[in-house]
Image (cartoon, rainbow, N blue to C red; front, side, top):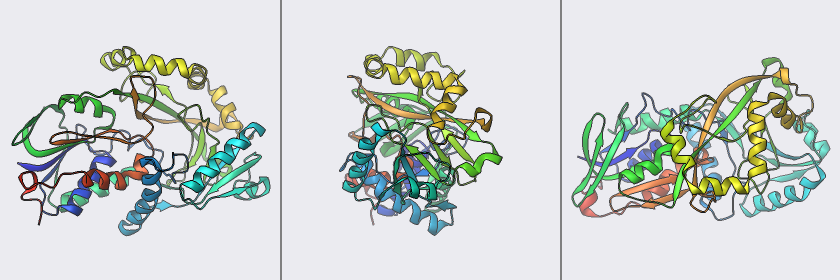
Length: 404
C-alpha cells in the first residue's frame, strides 16, 4: 500500500514526487511510467529554455511559477552540478507595427516583477550582431538547460528517499474507494491512499479513467524544428525571439542555443495526428478521431484559420520556414538548416474553442489531476510540484505513516 501513486514520469510528475518527500519524509511513493525511461515525451523533446515568465498574465500560475521556477531551477542545477547557462534572451520587433506590442510586453514584464530593459538597434547589435530589428527587450533571467538531465536527477532523489519508479507500466483503470485507490495497470494492480495525475499528453484520459469529466480535451500540437549547420552557429549567440502575435497562442519561430552548443530554429505549431506524433507521418486512428470529433477544435480552427494555414505552409515548405527566420536574421539561407527532432505540446482546449491559458489542477476525492501543463511547465516544474503537494489534504486517515 502506497501513500501516493504518481501517474507520469515526466518532469512535473518527478518534481511532484520530490516535493512529496520534502513535506512527508516517510511517505511511500511510486511513480508509474508507461515508457522504458523517464522524461520520454514533452520533457525529453523540450527546447531546454529556462523561461522568465514575461509573456504570461500577471498573477497567473504561469507568470508566478515561471518567475519563481527560473530561480529554483537555477539553484537546483547549481546544487546538483547540472550544466546550465543563464545567458539571457532578446525579444525583437522587426516591423514598425510591432513596436507597440513590444511596449505592451515590456509593461507586462515589469508587472511580473522582472528586471528587464528595452534596448535600441545599437545595443541589440552588441548582443546579437546578426539580428535585424527596430528594438528589443533584453531578458537577463532566461537561460538554457537539459531538462532530461534535470528529470533524471529528480528521479534519483525520489529513489534515494525510498520511492519506486515503475517503468513500462501503463495505467488502465483507476478506482477511488473509501479506503484508498486501486490502480489497474498492464503489469498488475496496486493500492494507494492518493493518486496524482501528471500524465501530460494523456492527463485528460487518466482523469476520465478515475471518473472525472472535464470541459476540456488535450490536443497534441507538434512543434517542428531545424538546426543550424555547425558552421553557421556563430549567427546566434544565445536566445532570439520575435514579438509574439497576441491573437495567436504560440510564440512564433525563434532561435535557441542549446546547452550542447547546437542552435535550434523553430518551432511552428501544427495539430499532430497522434498524441505522441513526432513525425509528419505519425498517425493514430483513435487519437485523430477523438480530436476531429471534438467541437472545441473546430471552434478554435475558425478563430485562427489564417494563422493555422500559415503554420501548415511552414510545415511543408522549408522555403517559407526560412523566410520566417529571415525576419530575425536575414543572413539565414535554406541550406543553413538541417532537420531536427520535433516536440509535441499537450495543450488543453475547452469546449468553447478557447485554449486553457494557465496551468490547471483538478481536485478529486483521493486524487489530484494536473490537466494542463504545457510550456513553461519544465521551467516551473519545481514550483508546480510544490503547489500540487500544498493541495494535499493532511488527514490522518490518508497519511498516517507519511507524517512525522
